[in-house]
Length: 410
Image (cartoon, rainbow, N blue to C red; front, side):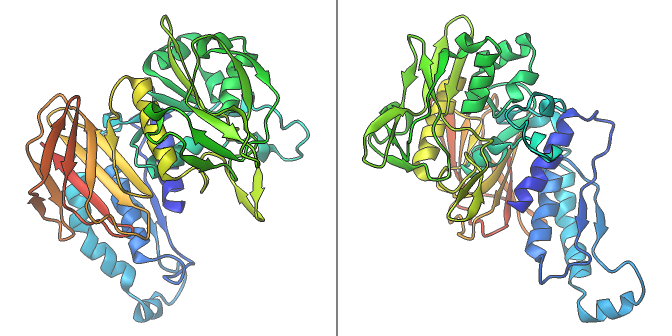
């Protein structure tokens, strides 16, 4: 998750800093060596930075004091990596990617969010005001492209929603709003629960599994999702018209409450609520875990459920989804007359055949160009198939661990 966390930090900064403020990634290896950080990791970092539209970078990769000559005698790998990678990175930089060109599910960043943190009054350190951002990690790892800033479907967690003005909230609901339980409760406590169909909070339930109960949102009715790392499911009383698409069960397999719930207000918009508090500090089998970005959240049934829920919220296909891949960072850049796609494989398992599902773009796609490791562009014999209001592309590309597919669609 280290590369993902660093990427998210840069993207958050890009979302609220003025465009004239340069953001320069730092590749800092020293005093570590390749025993702790591989050349594959550094190359992935450099590639992702270029795909974010950050063409400059700084380095701290060799010792800063005396006898650099001796260090280079032992290992000159970093210099070799930079020399060989520069032409490849230059090709990406020449695509002229801008901060406002990214497409995907919207993730919001607000510098005032810690002012709204609640439930930590007894903590002794200010760090507990910090709020986790599980959607930043979970959605890309499920193959779903994201962007930072308003527009389209928006995913919020914790007290983020309280940073929004009434107008911003209504605009987000019109585009479709995905909420964790704490975000939903935040709206309820602010007197806005009716916007998402909630009347009151009910007692929590001892749920240990979630069962898909609506085939339109998850595909396989009765499929089971383990909730070990998601915490105790929260419960709400819902207004008429709320649609429960999954149920929560206890250890005896008894139905004890609702899982994911959808609500549509014809005058306001659509919302989907998950019953998990993403800000819980949980321990499972002696290990700290974070709900929603946990091992029990990232699985095939949840991926299928989230795809259907997000498509319902946005009233159409997602801007970009990478099917059949486990643990990726997908990026979609729209430059009007062409699309740029970057897919970094974070899994030890290779992607044997990279496939893309895209919402139908404004321009027809007839060519798919791939950037090879030798910095040359290759036109692929890709299978491009329109599917209603979407298009599916079978690239035939193999993407190994920490490799990035860089594609231009025209």
